[in-house]
Image (tube, rainbow, N blue to C red):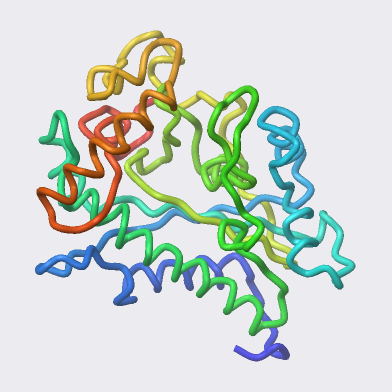
Length: 287
């Protein structure tokens, strides 16, 4: 697509491009003998670069958390773009049913397909981010995938312990794609067994309506005090009515799961996802 080509519907163009990549790209693979796909049927949403929610993230999570304008200006220092000219393009990549089914049967350690999705499927996710940025820039729209920026880093939040300069889940939440559960996972219309990604671009796309005002609106525990299935599913005891203990979770993941993956599957990897499978919100919004 050339810079001079007129795009009638930016939202449809981007949506179709993401869906086509997931459907057809050889990068969407678990790299197993069956060459299973990692991701299926993506969801795509959009939010404005000047959406107040991004400033709220900065205020609540930490001053290090970028607004769309900050990461865009950092990447394109010569640009005079204003926040209202920017759009955050966010997508959700649901796990394939066979991956969820495998992990659903586990109770202590993750299934091989789940780890392959976390490692090799995520490699495909990175390729998708680069693909979207390239499409936009070839059409004359400056863009950046925040998590691929050389300035992206993981850091400490006074309130939330582990944090980073950009959160894909929070971008998805701002873009109308889901709300948070007791385990911190993002519950989307296709469930929380998923990965997500986002790109900030100088392009005008109407924001997706957020069908919620409460950031816990899709979690049964916060709605009626019930469920707590993710608490039962967590092998690390890292989830309780108080929420997600990131330190406990991390200590279980490293080195216990690292060692399990290498000894049982023969490659380096990590992940767990037991709280994302075998729960009412695995593949849908249960509310």
